[in-house]
Amino acid sequence: MKFRIIAVGRSGPKPVYSMVADYQKRLQRIAPTTLIEVVEERRTAASRGNIEQLLSKEAGRIRDKIPPGALLVPLEITAPALPSRELAAKISHHRDSGVGEICFLIGGPDGLHSSLLNQPWRLSFGPMTFPHMLVRVMLLEQIYRAMTILERIPYHR
Image 1 (cartoon, rainbow, N blue to C red):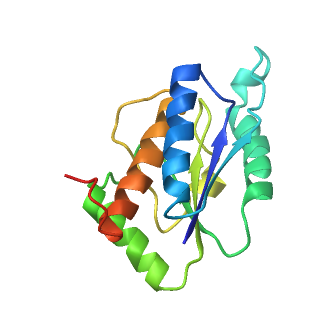
Image 2: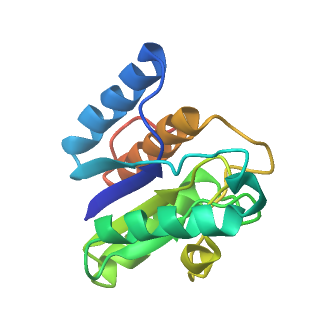
Image 3: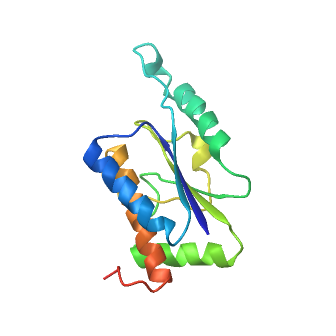
C-alpha cells in the first residue's frame, strides 16, 4: 500500500516541517509515502468574492497530481472523525480489496472544491480549524499509527 498526500500551500515553519519529515521517514519503512504541495491560488481583494473559482483552479492542480486508480480521501471539517484503530481498519480493508494507493487531500484556507469532496470516504480531525502544516503532521502521524497497528509494531497505546 502506498500513500500520497496532496496539500494546497507551501512548507511552513522549520519545527513543523521537521516533524513532517520525521513522520515521512518513519513511514517509508512501512509504506511508501509521498507529500506533494500544490500552489495555493493567490487571494486578492477582487477574487475574494469568487472563492468557488479559486477553489476550482486549485482543484485542477490537485487532479493533475492524483495517480490513476488511487482512492481519494479528502480531509473535510464536516466528515466523520475516526479513532486510530478504525482508521487502521479502513486502510486494511482498502488494501485487502486491492487498492494500491490512498491519496489524502488537504485543502487551502478555504478548503477543497466541491468536486473533490464527493468521495465515499472523507476524513476529519474534528470541528476545530488547524493550520495546514499542522494538519500534515497530524495526518502523517495517524497514517503511521494506523500502519504500526496493522503491522503490530509497538507504537500505538
